[in-house]
Amino acid sequence: MNNKTLEKTLFEKIKKLGIIDALKEKPYLKIENPPFLPLSIEKLYENRIVLAHYFEMNGDLVPDPDMEVEIDEKNEKAKALTFQNMYIYQSVEDNPDQKLQTDLNLFLLEWLKNIENQKYKIKK
Image (cartoon, rainbow, N blue to C red):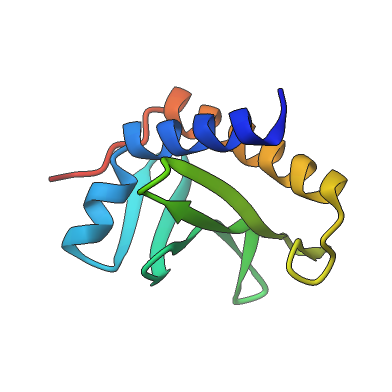
């Protein structure tokens, strides 16, 4: 799948999960879905959101994973901008390598599929 098709697919998944509409109502959501980790969703800017799971270790919240995603509603596209967990931080803005962009987009797609399959629901 090329990045253009992947960006359309990512947008469709994010929209289907209700994230875009929910962030129009309020800039931050936390979805509880035991036994899974809570999912935090935050609107950073008009076109940028953060999706994250956090676990606690030694009293600190640790992201695993945490991703910034650019949302282009007009063109119905989304793409991963950053990825971080307790071991690594990667940014396509710091490293405009096309392979990194593809890798982050593919990871985001799998993560969104997991979120959907694990039945996370945004309460209206």
